Image (cartoon, rainbow, N blue to C red; front, side, top):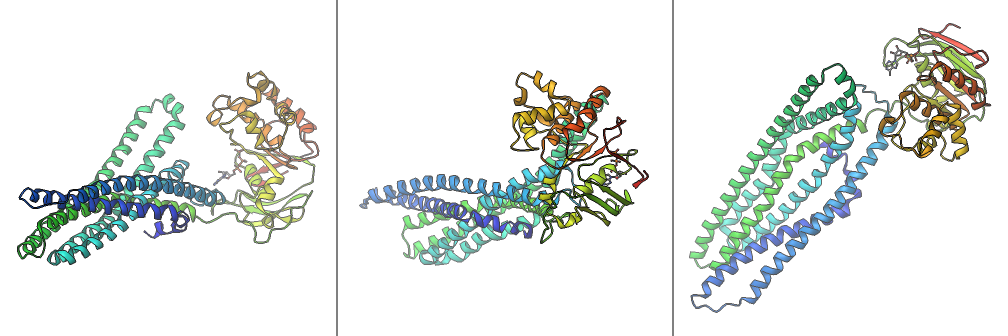
Length: 551
Ligand SMILES: Nc1ncnc2c1ncn2[C@@H]1O[C@H](COP(=O)(O)OP(=O)(O)OP(=O)(O)O)[C@@H](O)[C@H]1O
């Protein structure tokens, strides 16, 4: 519940809509109780008129019509307003969560997988809607209706008020509270197993080709079926708690009804109440318990909402690894980059970079080479401040990167990483990520420099060709070159190119190195590569081995 309460400010932003929905649900419930009560009284009284008593049919029949009309309208309004407010609330929560998540990536908890994050951002957020729409609202409405009904009984059939009040309180508050407490574990299990099932689906789709090629699709399917079976079993366990609670509520409603009937008959016998009123009250009592049934059905979902809220809080409150300084310094216009005695390791492991001293002058083209795992990409990460070194300093124009605003730094340095993605959008929009105001001339120049201009020209829709999810409509080498073009089109004075010629054949690689000089003229370039670099392509070469500069 504590985790759920953390979302209170977001709920408060939508308080107007949620309170209106609550008021309408109260009207719906009250109209339902009044409808049943009036109908009971009306039918009984009408039956008695045949015994010769004169009876005004007009008022009660218009009351019945009026209450049923109010009930229909109020229910419609409640659904409309309630869903509208809830959907807006969920959008708020997602926006808030994204805002909290981005500065926290990469998350310190590396066990958190992408599929799990997706699950948290979608299903877990969705689970929160139940917190208000189906739980808090009905409970509040039921408390009001139960209190009014107890007061009416205390006035008309005092002997029934206490038992009714007790039964109603138990059904509306105690049973749901017990249900929340007892179904807590089952709710958490449902959320976890649902997340595991979703992750299995994503893994299966991502790795489908390999699973088929290795002939283990059957095993994967069986594994997925196990996960789905475990989820179904967990849902079954959760449902059994709800069923038990539902049964208890039915029992309490029966008990209340019998006690009202008993006390009502005694009052009737004593002449304290007339028959139609007593029957009307009996039906109204029955109608009031309608609210408690809805509470149980909804509260059963509260345990999953609480588990979801906990999972969301975990992500939203994860420590921020790289924070902006409180008072950032201005970005030096054109400064040299320097690593001074830098040592860096990932999460307490052995250092992957050791005592690095390196200076890169403005406009210099520097290649970093070295065997796989020697720390080349890690060095680029430090340069972009995607991680901070444990000791030593990385500076730009003499200013430590830690003193700069990250957004300023990232506008100054563009990166082509080893796993830069193409997005499911047109080629043009993929390139415009590099520079939003680039014109077509600049886009074509970047495409040509990345050795992919001819291919894009051959496409019927040219720059407007949509690439599909993960760039599935182009080859790996082509998508790599598109990412390279995106980096080249940026205005950043410093370019970090991590294996830019990956996926290019030797001829295209040589052509790329040939154009690198003109494509990056006047800019600082740090080129990480395993490729053989032609003479004159770069100004200097640094070699890393086991995290240390050896040349
Ligand atoms: N996110 C990470 N968490 C933990 N260890 C990491 C992480 N990224 C890299 N490493 C480790 O750091 C070391 C250096 O990796 P890095 O990617 O910098 O090497 P590289 O020289 O760029 O290799 P390659 O040429 O294969 O791309 C490797 O031993 C690698 O296992």
